[in-house]
Length: 317
Image (tube, rainbow, N blue to C red; front, side):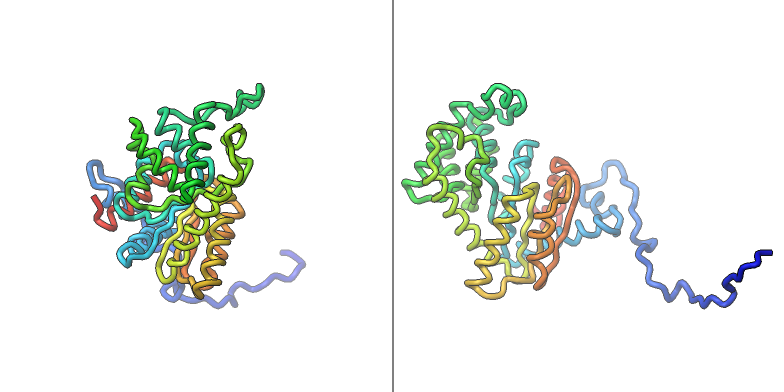
């Protein structure tokens, strides 16, 4: 027997499991998928625990926002286009689910190249080694020309690209985010950081035109943010820096001019969770009311899953 004193466990005070709060209950477990069953059945079969529960909740917030006529703002990085998801985003606009689309400058490059030339996304390392990265003549000439035309017409950057793509009517028009948004009267705002996009490397680049058209888009975006109060939704898909920063400033302006803009819902979808989306999209904006969500996974899986769930909830076609 040990010579050292030991605590007496017989004196422990216990209570019944019936009085304890538990995080997991038998009715929250997942159900196995049945071959041939519907997507609605599959989505309902997910467990009611952690992120599956969050995704279900957020889908309801998006659906309720549209039922109430509140905005659903979809912010995105260009990677969404590069992994083939433009048709999914276009469908959400056609279903009147996305009411405003916002992207960085790379978005118009990949969208325009796919629409006009049927291809996009070069091997950066190869072109960087010999100084040819981003130097495709057609891309630089075409898009910079569009921006200059938008400057002359006093249009937003996203607006003029969508307008001109529709006028050109290329074979790839059906999968252009900007062209279809223009057709559907859904604002597309493009938020440019000068020097980050390959079109800035070309002699046709006009800094005055880029700045004026993108700044007009910022004001359009801020106007939409001002309507988020009491049930609106902001989604960030894959923009790690530009859109989270732009959103925070637009929200500040909206609150400065219109007063309280609160009780709305936000979500960040990305392959990795980064500081700015977590703080500037999920946490800070909803401190005065509402809720922010974080979902981690590859865009090419998460966006179709999310979109299908929202359409099922709304009964969309």
